[in-house]
Image 1 (cartoon, rainbow, N blue to C red):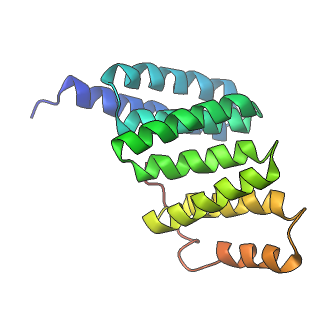
Image 2 (image 1 turned 60 degrees about the vertical axis):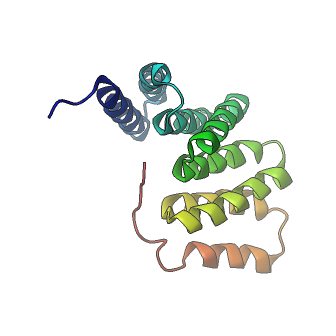
Length: 170
């Protein structure tokens, strides 16, 4: 069976995104950015696709992790808009986590609100990793302003059944 050029590009973009994750895990954020830029260059010519929404979301995360919060929010917004247009709940939830994590840096209340929205959506689509990331990142900011009961409830939510499973849907 001959794969189409479009399918080949989609697979190449996904592989580049995964390679970018390896670069970050290896402590090479510049390598991560390079692979994500390549993934974007592969995905953008294909038009509005779910893969491009994932690339934009991962770019948001990469910028957030190197503390470039403005760029993180811009990429998250692009991912959210595209994920909504193409109907990708998976990319949407990741973009919400990344946006909330970037926003919380400058606006605690709005960031927590986005992260709580992300946690609910993540739970509804079965994305346990994003669910825990959203709660954890809200907790990091919320612990400064929440009463002890709310902090304890957030910790309990992270320990709910299913949250100990590795789950990466992209």
